[in-house]
Length: 339
Ligand SMILES: [Zn+2]
Image (cartoon, rainbow, N blue to C red; front, side):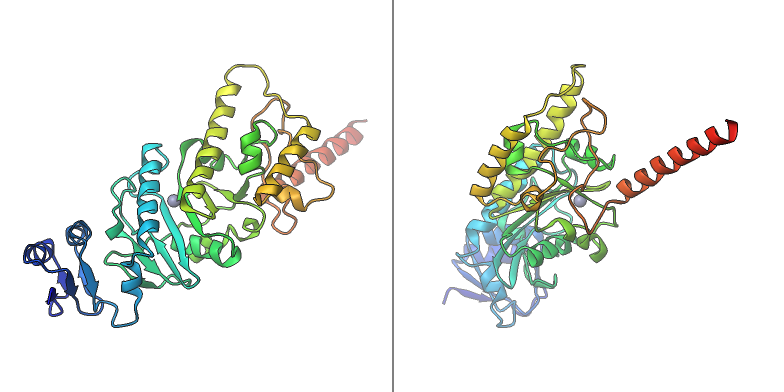
C-alpha cells in the first residue's frame, strides 16, 4: 500500500513529505484540519502526492487537489506572476479567485507575493468566506470577490490589484473620460469608482455592489482596482486594459495638446461590438445619457465618476454640486447687497 499514515501529526513538515516521497508513497493520510508548512505544501505539489483525511470526509480537500481544480490553480498562479511582473501588486498585495463550483471558490492565500504562488498554496472557500480546504489561510479580501460572485452569476473569476496608473485615478476621486481609445471602450468602457472603506471588511466588500451588474471593472477609492470576467486570464486582461488606458492619458497630457475624442456616432459602433461580445456597460441600459463622458475641463484627462448610477450617486458629485450652487447663490446675494 503506497499510503503513509500521518494522522497523528497536527502539522506536516517538508521532511515528512520528503521521507514519504523517497519511500515511494503516493498518498498521505492526514488528520482533519491538519496544516502543512509552505515547504511541505510545495513538496506535495512537486512529488504529485495525494492528500486524504484532512477534510474529515466531506470531500473539499479532495476537490481542491483534484484534476478538475488543477488547470484553474495553474491559471491563477500564472496570472499572479503576470500581475507582479507588470507591477500591479506589491509586497503581498492583490488577490485572485475562481468560482470552481456554485458553492466553492478557489482563492489565493493571505500574506503571499503573487510572484511566488504555487498551486499548493491555494485555498478553497464557500460563498460565505468559510475556508473549506487548503493548508494556508485564505486572503482577507475574499469577501469582496464573494459579493461579486453572489451579485453577478456570470462572473467566474475576480482579480484585485493595485496597478499604479489606475490607482492614481482612484486616489483622486476621478475616473478617466470615455471615447478616447476603441479597445478600452469595448473591454471596459465607463469605469465606476466605489467609495473608500477599510480593506478586508464586509462593508468594503459591499462598496462595489451598485456597479457589479453594469461593469466588469471598478476603481476602489484610495486603494486599487477590481475586475471580474468569465476566466481569470480575462479578468487580468481588464486590469491591463484599464491601467494602460490611464497611463496613456497621463502621457498624452504631457504633450500639451488636448486629448481628442472618438465622435459619438462612431462610439455607438463600439458599444454595438461590446453588446455582441456580451460585455456589460452601464451605457447600454441608458436611453438618454450621452455615450461619451466628456472631461470636467476641455482637454483634461479626468471626469466625475458614476454619472450613470442613479441609486448610488457619488458623494463627490453631490458635494461638488452643492458647492457650485452655494457659490452661485452667494455671488448673487453679494451683488444684490452691493447694488
Ligand atoms: Zn488591495
